[in-house]
Amino acid sequence: MQTNNKENSNQKPVILFADDDELCLDVGVQILQKLGYSVLRARDGQEALEVFESNKDSVDLVILDMRMPYNGGRAFDQLKQIKSDVKVLIASGFAEDQRIRDMFELGCIGFIQKPFSVDLLSKKVLKALKN
Image 1 (cartoon, helix red, strand yellow):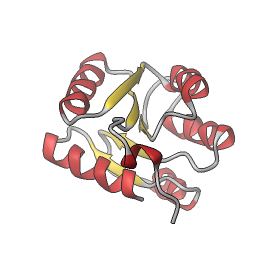
Image 2 (image 1 turned 30 degrees about the vertical axis):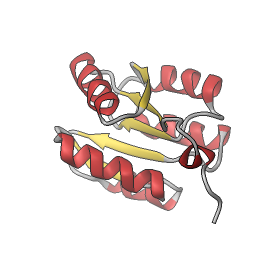
Image 3 (image 1 turned 90 degrees about the vertical axis):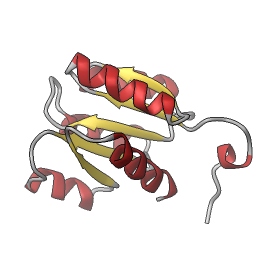
Image 4 (image 1 turned 90 degrees about the horizontal axis):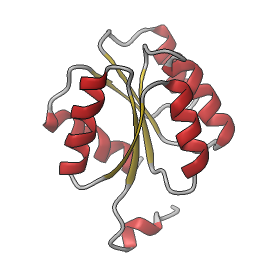
């Protein structure tokens, strides 16, 4: 099993959080920062791709809102093209649907229903980072 160098140092894991809802984005970023993560933010799927492309060697996890401009599904597909082993957690205010289940087949590592609690987000992120 390959170990993450950040696990062996004092570096915080880096999470890219993408959501088009400004309030959800702000709250998600604040929660993740309070949990001890370094957080990059994006307001839609296209911006998520740009931020990821610039930081692909340092991003440990991407949390993508499924329903946003340049949606999470499209962004997920392109993230996998940029870096095939990228860890992606899908967030949605809607129930898990067939597209999300299909994304699991393509390497998506988790799903979190919005709105989420601090506890649930913490557990999902920890599980995703260990995956």
